[in-house]
View 1: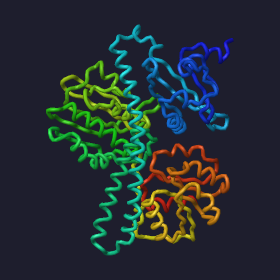
View 2: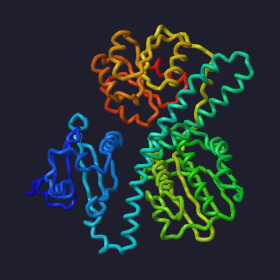
View 3: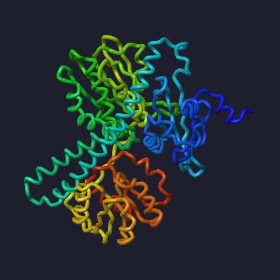
View 4: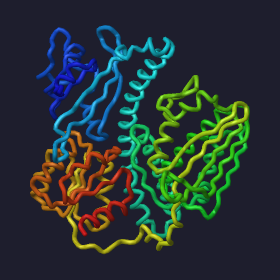
Length: 493
């Protein structure tokens, strides 16, 4: 029988394996030729040295968070294109021990024999577009992180205003409106982060008629003044869904409908009760949405590709991401999405989302002005942003929590050793040390010390490798002070 090495050495794809630090420990002949050139073989060199046109540290970060990375590469020598995929090598304990990188040159696919030149150019253009979108995604994630910190610098002071408002009518009027603006900013950053990576939905029972009624003004605005919008939903329907994620899906479909009706038309959004089979013995109750426009329609030969990433029929401004993201979000809801269209008559998108029992009536939350009587609590806050730190310190002081503010990761261990806090609030994006590294130092010395992660990034996946049994929590900035206090109470409970 053939050995694994013999098989890897025989294929035309370039295969590299690195250790966890990025040093190459295996390369097949194709990889030596592609990445080594005159200096082959490449074993013993760093991946960053043989792939200088890629941000290797960012590549590894994406693999650690999402399990896989893919992108394009244009050779600086002969201008040829390759498609590269990277994934993690894990040991028996699940820890990442290294990485595997596979590069497939498009020339090796012998595209001219299976497709014409125009199809080859289309594939190359889509690959280059994927590279641009990948870069844009990294920029978007960075912007979202910084914007979340700005919002987090405002949120605690809004809460303080609300708690101390008393009978001042001006404060009572202003505080909720500022809070609404911060909440809207948070939704925007969540959508930006969703562009870079689609998180798992937080599915809860949602009353369909109420959700659609609240969404209707945005539908009217997105559809434009020339489009007549009608909505209808059975008031008895309740779906199991992430309301914010589905809102973005529907917004994208409405924008597409607007583009399909440049001279105006009608847009109908309806929700009825239905069922999904999905191969189960008994049908699954579902909510069936239909979004119907009277636009130009989609050609039949195009309809099969509309949910593919980077596929777009728009000559200007289309990214080819909207429907691909919509399809992924619906699938993560364990639902279905499909489209029907007739040229010259319009298009209907169908979305089926699992139904849920009507939500039970719960007691209303306590007003923000109430203060919980809690035992003495000592907290170490590790946060470099001045406005965020000042706001959190003010909230904890108001709540009677003795807090110590540390601005650098390098100072965290010594300050914790000096104060022996009950819990730590740890920002992941520190300027001197990675927040995960700080956490590892804390956990090594105080394995039972509760740690509450606080971050503006959508990077909760980074926390999946925390030691078993460790008391940890996670808060996505910006968060309200009551959310922070509830998280601390839960960790210390």
